[in-house]
Length: 308
Image (cartoon, helix red, strand yellow):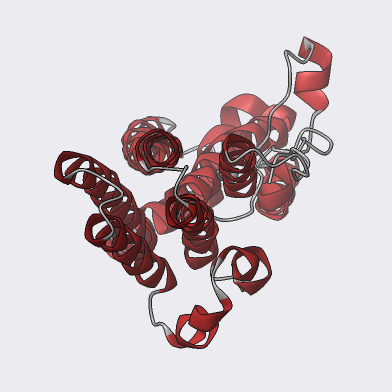
């Protein structure tokens, strides 16, 4: 995700990192070249496109703007919901850690070990969710937080975060059997686990359910057809300015189309997708610090304005 602190108007105008321009400049260049070709034809043969009216393009442009706006809004809602879910995960992990440290008897060696295992599993769960949503290998981030006796089964699990959640449930059952927690506190902490499971399921829903393809295809095709036909309707009235105007319009429409595709899948590593790595590291640092550890991993800072 791009995190820039109040860039100036000039820097904002020329910034490329985080801009959608690098993704759509081939289309803009193509529309500009087509517009220049049509303008040259109009200059050599003035009556070639004089019969074309701009009215149909105005109506189609309004309709296309509404379609693109609706799709962009739907994509942004997915992005914002995903950010809210990860905010909930941060809250649940911290709350579970606080409850474990506050209510599990740490004077009992068994209780202290249980605290550490439960909190380490919470960290592993967070990393596992991130890797599942990004389809990346999780082992380097989570194996150090999970008891080695579970490593073999963990690698065989079809849904790693769900497997880790079951291990956390076993830890709560262990607390209940050893009378390390009251019945009420077991229920309260189990509610935190349920909330983390809800976050996982909701993130999987967003990840596995894109916007309807037919709708995406309709907007995509209409955008291309409109931008390709636009020079024919503008050249007789705009003349040599036609390539510039058509390029600006193409940048707007193609840019909105490409930005919608990027926001539609909020869990990736693109410039405008969510900083899951930084959020996972924040949870890891907070929970390890709560355990009293001093050898903490470093915060993840933006690199040239980009936070992974």
